[in-house]
Image (cartoon, rainbow, N blue to C red):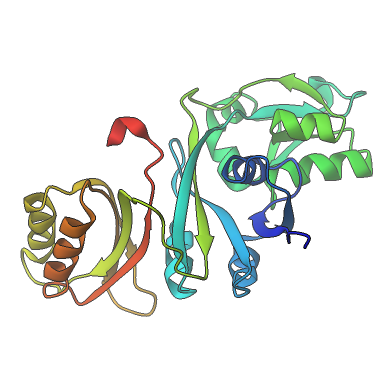
Length: 279
């Protein structure tokens, strides 16, 4: 019987950084990409239990993509994996264009933020936010836009036959994006050692400190904490936390204790840590 291809929903098109990250997750596998213009379309695609999703969640220069945390929770999705990709941003144009005639530079908002010092050094060129890095390159090629440049990957430049005017224009060469692998199903991962939690606490003195104390007492390594406002609630917040642990039993013991301290608690994922120097 012929094996069915995995359906993988990503934000962006062929040549995007999301596609490159998905290839890392599914090395040597034949997959069917579902290309989406927005993260919302990715999340909606995951209503189908046979579809997995790859989304960016944070960048080492531009920070966290906060709406994606809320969307994971709202769509009741499960984080089943992560990967970190070194992101190199490149300025590219049509072969007949050059730096002197560029009037606009197009790219995804996160990519523009990662290259802000470079853009600031060229105030005569307008920065224009678009849905995707690779899609910006594709539109330039298809519409023969001589006065527009794109910020995208080398893969996109090659795919859409654009010349790279300047390589690696990101503001810091230690530019990494963390991507998550998502599923509607709660897929058990063998020997997980990382978790992402979402919780809220009462608005009383020391409530958050008590939660953090339990994590410390159980020997859980808190590698990230991020707050995000509750939609429709005045000055109430969700806290999104990444934890590393060595013993799954101890992790569940900590969760049971937290359940008595917090007002809401969700485990958004149990998966493998992909940064070896954090463990």
